[in-house]
Image (cartoon, rainbow, N blue to C red; front, top):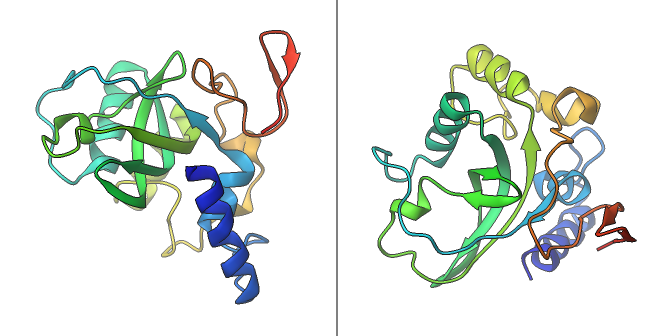
Length: 177
């Protein structure tokens, strides 16, 4: 459902004539290069996180542990609103240091985002001195203007039971969402 919602936003942005390096919006960028990730309720597994600081919490966790950092959009029940968000993944499953610590976000979740190479994450954070890599409007959205090979972590696939966002193979069969 999150993928369809982002697609509807892209239609609206295109109708308005928006353009950022050939994309109508960050939503279109994420839809083109992102993938869906599975979430399983596990309770809080990361301690000492800052509330409402998903980009910082996920980046620190990724840099400290070697998990893969992901930026994109997510929805958490009971709030049916997609927001820009950051989390980590391990074996295609979401590890969300920020929302896992939030007592109010106890329902189902949906995640769609782009796995970022650790080197690109580190370089961008040092250059910007601001948490987050994708929504760099101050720098002219550089991630949107360079080839995916510079920032996309190709090792990360979608979570178990989730179709790949852009063509690929899953369990030996073609899978296109």
